[in-house]
Image 1 (cartoon, rainbow, N blue to C red):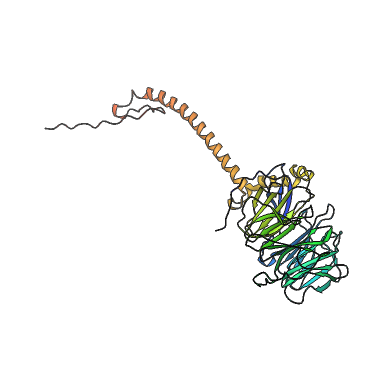
Image 2: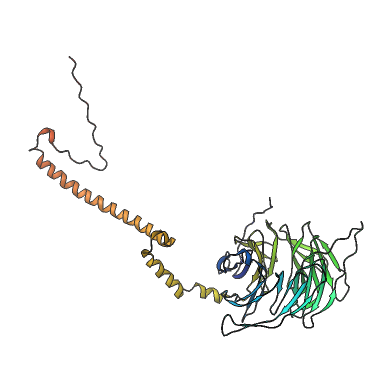
Length: 437
């Protein structure tokens, strides 16, 4: 059974996050209060396992932002992250294992491809795709991770049987390749298997942090040497995610067992583990550029928000499907919150649809209408009972008076009985005793 820890969640500030899952859905999670709980506000796309999202990248710009989604069936879609509209679609022969930045670099098995896509502003579906630049990252093996620096000039790759190597995107040429570390004291050599890698700083492409399947975190310095400058062993599970911080020396590590920790790569010191155990492998971590918050998601179907200073869990939301990636919309402001709270024409149309819902058969009536109808029927029933009691009291008085006038004319055996009041009990008939002999 997975280990879990119950912790209190104080809530997180206003935020907007985009998540992708194994059914090909893109879900929008928002927090619209000063300190609140995240909720799912939109879901884009139909659920289809063949369209499972294997990689995603967000060009988080204030104007014309773009979301690139690579699917299992070989399609790379470009979406508007504000409303989910499809802007362009590119067909790839083989499945894509990762995708970074726009213009985007994606890799498949041992090859990498650089392609630029120009999205037309006139019509939503218009786009222009130039001829891609494809090169072999390695002769054998499979590429599992990649990253692009902040200036979009260099890209790194690594994977199963593939040492970390850096490429110049402008020239499409390899500039540096790592060298395998030597065998240990027992003469055992660990095979190369990189599961995550990133540039330690977006402005400097010389320092690289990489995670391996042998629960190691390695620091490479291109300007110093080919072998790792620093190696750190963490827990006993494979490192699945390595994400850099804004300071240029801190990294966040996620393992296959759900452990989350932060390291200072200058000294290799463990800064601390985050409170709250996840019950599944973590597949993605996103760092907010302005707030001290990171978001994580994984196979336990939970999206979590953490405080990077106190390493406390701020809030969680259950999203039903296994999640593959999370991205933060850093330009989500209070103005959007105020505009979202104001009633729109669409909401007015929704109310009119509920009012006209009476014409539909009972099985297709909305839940809101059924609840209102139930309350209305309950109130009408109480009103009818009150009216019935009033009529009954008036009829009771009339019956008593008429019965007093007619009782003298009727025989004794047919005299009417006076109606009883509400609290009166009807007298029991006494059985006549038969005389014996």
